[in-house]
Image (cartoon, rainbow, N blue to C red; front, side, top):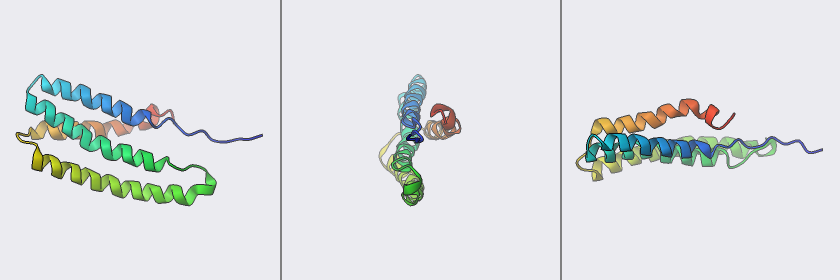
Length: 123
């Protein structure tokens, strides 16, 4: 008898965050083109590092690979901060005109959606 714990469907998290990013960007686009693009950028600044973290964190599973799981959690956390900072730096450098309010609102909306990750992934 083989008993194993199935991996949670964490792929749902970035997909839902992507959909939420596009919906919010569309709503901001109704205000102005700059707001829509800025909201999209803010959502992606949060989404991309989070998706990479999820990829690393759930790459390995099982008690025999606990050191790899733990190592990837540390790597994922570090890379998440680096990618977030890089995302903001690129947006501030390349995106003109920029709607700061929409940018940070998009970023914070996707960050806030992390509160529901356990529900989304059925954990």
